[in-house]
Length: 77
Image (tube, rainbow, N blue to C red; front, side, top):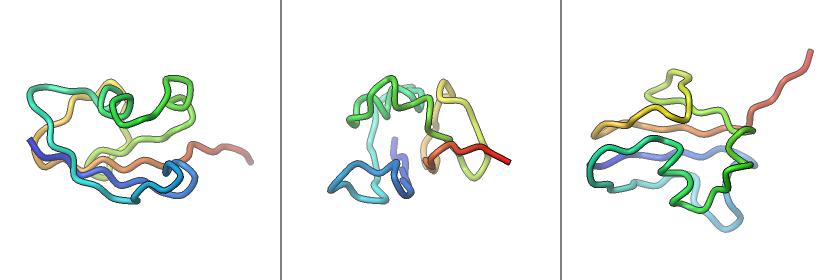
């Protein structure tokens, strides 16, 4: 199964790419994919996740050809 991961701004790891294709076997949740690719559990609470251009929770399962986009969660007024 092929998933596209797009990473914006400060969410990108130093020296990392802003867009990569990930190949996975079986069912996986977004959170599991990110943990396997170097993100730490405590970092995930500050990341906003979009799946196919819709905001989703980190425990959402991905399917073949899904596009995940990560951005920094910001708030304010």
